[in-house]
Image (cartoon, rainbow over all chains, first blue to last red; front, side):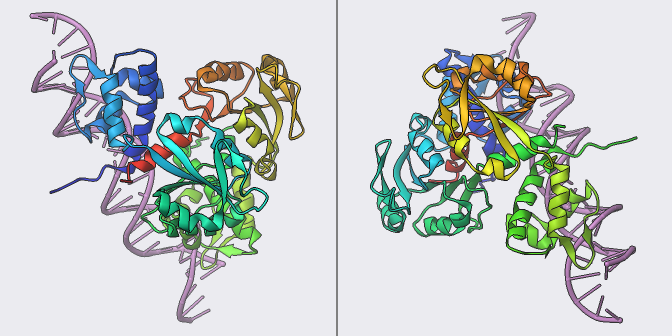
Length: 206
Length: 206
DNA sequence: TAGATTGTTAATCGATTAACAATC
DNA sequence: TAGATTGTTAATCGATTAACAATC
């Protein structure tokens, strides 16, 4: 059986389609077109149709797409029909803000464990989570079956903590530390770094 | 005079080169090669050389690049030789965490004004900043000459607040709200949305 | 000098767009 | 039916990689 691989750049656009479609759904919009969806997010209609065609046929000629149906299909494609447990590692200001952020739960992500190495923080409660000793990651993460971690530790320790996470069975890391992690290829890493984004924009300013 | 435009995708990689080079610089590494730099950040040596060649000749055959010199040059290309003032709009948990984050100052970004529309928050101090009424943005932002804003308001009001920011003279927005902003083409927008990144990664998990 | 590495050109690869038959 | 819009193919466009002469 041949399974052609979908380009990662296409996969990366699907969550943006989903976000816009969920917004339409909340607004009570029942139907949309590649044209309308494209205008909402600044992507060409042709590209949206091409991207979706990688996964199946979801529309109807003449009428476009059922918003509810396309939401469902994209959720299935992105494996969002299950709840994903997250480990939150590093409970500084950012870790605390993320622990309190409602958006994760609203989208099927549940922070199930929070870690820090600071004895002052261990045992404290944040948003219903008890902060645990990061030396316990290796034990707790497999126990809870957690596959995704959000890394909000200082840059100086990010690489070694990331390695510990991989060792504990983590397979995807959302990295907030301002450093590029070197990990095995099979580990999925996405970076969130405001400095990098700001420096990208200053190029165009004067 | 012909000035070919550098592709945005190339500009977007420069901050990553800079980050890695600054790291090398702190480590006391004097010289590097496109090969070594590429391995550090997972980009091919050929691509790094090609990207840099858009802006000039910065290396020496046989020996590679002076780290300090290339840092300097990239900073100049990205307009990082001046301090950039930032407006922080929306002082919830995330806004507060960003206000306290040291990384901005360390990279030449200074949060000069913080805004919220909540009377409970206005007048309070966070990390040396007095939170101001967002109705004052139109007056204060031009006064301080602020060109860049970080937007950390709820999704429901992000579009309208963004429009107010543009109206106040803001030309670049780092958007943390989970919604795609529709703004004039000349406004530079970069999005930071953990849900989008997590959903990208779950595609590859099971 | 010999070895290493740049900057650049040409070749390859991949992504986006245009166009349109199919069809709701 | 007529109009609208899909899914897909082919054409175009752009980005990445390979290769190598130049040269430190």
